[in-house]
Amino acid sequence: MTAPTPLIAGNWKMNGLAASLDEAKAIAAGLAGAPARVALCPPAVLLHRMAEALAGSRVLVGGQDHRAEAAGAFTGDISAEMLADAGATLTILGHSERRAGHGETDATVAAKVGAALRAGLEPIVCVGETLEERKAGDALAVVTGQVRGSLPAELAGRPFSVAYEPVWAIGTGLTPTTPEIEEVHRAIRATLVGQFGEAGRAVPILYGGSVKPSNAAEILHVDEVGGALVGGASLKADDFLGIVRAL
Ligand code: PGA
Image (cartoon, rainbow, N blue to C red; front, side, top):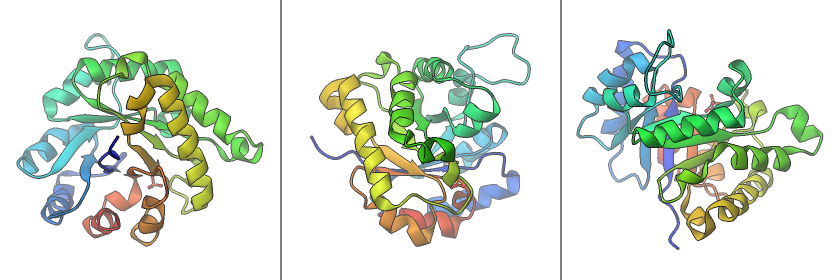
């Protein structure tokens, strides 16, 4: 089976105003020849404008979260269908800032993945251990448990990716060693093959957590790393392009 095409996705989190679309346009303009799929996931209120600004470019646009329900009395929330309607083709689900800050369990994430598929969105499903879990020697058990619990069987045959994001590496400037990254990615791959058979080998496994131009080449060339989910460094075109070019 051929290796999956790498995916480099930028997660803007709660950052970005209309003026930030210039950075997105600069990213699109700088991508020529990059051997990757590239996505930007802005705040939901920017999504439609970003999709319009990047129409015809290689940059895919994605959401950062959505509810499992398609519509209803859920003040302040949005659905997968709304993201797709606004121009999204992907969605980040199960980010640790959602799991920890909004009480999302594996079951919540799995239901949202089902909703993404219903709406035709490609999910990027995040998993990752806390520092306490790593120190206790539980990183592999936590991460593979999250993979099993967050990926419903209906993903079989559908495009999706998994992002390994150690919670302690997000926004901290800290990163695991490359052997630590490889160990977790191999464990995720084995879990995916256990769940989805040989098709599990074609699922990109992204690394996320303090990826920047200066460490991207080392991380992206680790065995079983199939791309990156980038937070802070995706807000500036030069930094994000530096990561894409490190492939
Ligand atoms: P960071 O965030 O690159 O700013 O560490 C990564 C993420 O949360 O996806």
